[in-house]
Image (tube, rainbow, N blue to C red; front, side, top):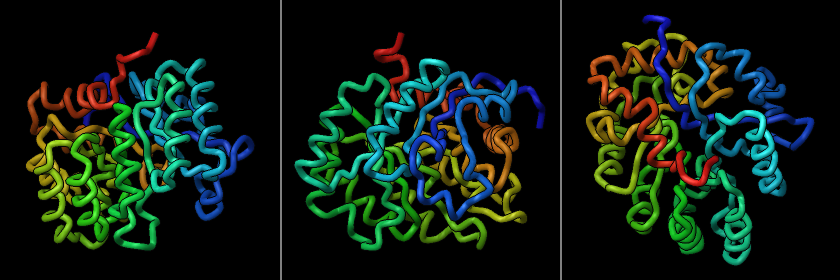
Length: 290
């Protein structure tokens, strides 16, 4: 793949610094537990920095979720590429959820909300009444809701999306297919069903971390990406790096090159849509920014 990288937007970036805020989960992944801020990203990406970045909540201790948003807003004053924030909010807490969403209304870069579903022990957690009500409240404020789930949770997510037609959903990491085992079904069936719902788009992200050394190649990833393209079309896919989590499997530049190789069969306009135009539209990157 050529080292010439076109201008692009990254729809899924995390930042953290455990000296500033607590991230308990980092203890289990020491390889990426150090500070990861715009400084480290610029050092790693070099000339391949994206033109704009969507920061996605980084599983900070839930009691500090609002502080994480404030911190990223501060980072954005020095790194204007940070154009949008997907904030952490527990959406199933009734009045507490309402208060948290109201408090975020004053944060200029907040464009979306994420309540990470993948670690919920109950398979129906995201379709319980309180959860559905919270997600509807997200949509009423004009924000997106990011879905971070594992394949067995996709059927419940389909129910959630159907129950919230006024909310726009973004499926993170393509629903985390089991690429290590080369499993396509039932993931393939559930993705097709989810894509038939008009208020869902999907991130082309996180795939290499669901693979192993033998299945991180474009050839092994292509059946998954081809299915995403067949279901969502180029107009509903968003490129994301999932940096720095991606570093557990590949460098920033390597995943970028892999994604571009997988998108090579598309037209120039379709590639531009996946690599930036769709993210600008979905997350409103030109709205309310100086």
